[in-house]
Image 1 (cartoon, rainbow, N blue to C red):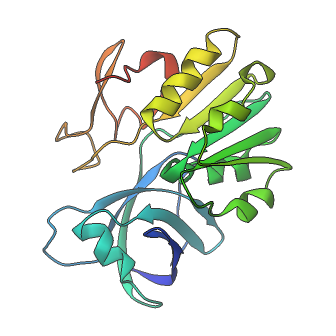
Image 2 (cartoon, rainbow, N blue to C red):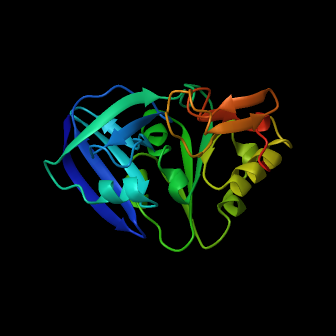
Length: 229
């Protein structure tokens, strides 16, 4: 069991949870979090937001019983972490854009922190969060509030794009990229139960058949995914 360092409410039911310990993981992977005994039955899959010497952190939104319990954690409370799970974003070189919409910014911060030559685009419905944290990592951070974050994005400027957020946003980026040689990687947000590919709850339809978002993903090539499922 690990101990909570902090669990800060950022507004709009979004929290940043920081846990003590040294953990493995890479950008785009996730952990299964659990801070209760019997109910709810399943742990909760949460993307790695950040990690470093002696800590790991997770950005999450309260949407149900499990995340409500997580939101009540206080400093020094105990929590169980299992992981890391999933494939994560690839380590590549080139000019890269990171595009996050809403809670989709959660698995992208570690990418902004890890790789070089990156521009960041963040889109929010009504309130921006963690923008200053992103600005500490990269020079160019573009923020959109209440508008389409893709309006600021010139896809042709980039070799690769990492994105996570609403399916409509990711689908549009993939379509925009068809007009250039830009390669898009999307991190799919699906309901997950087991986290290890056994229950098939997180099935994602792709051009190569059904894939398990937890085990085969959550990161896929953007052009492989069917977004209208």
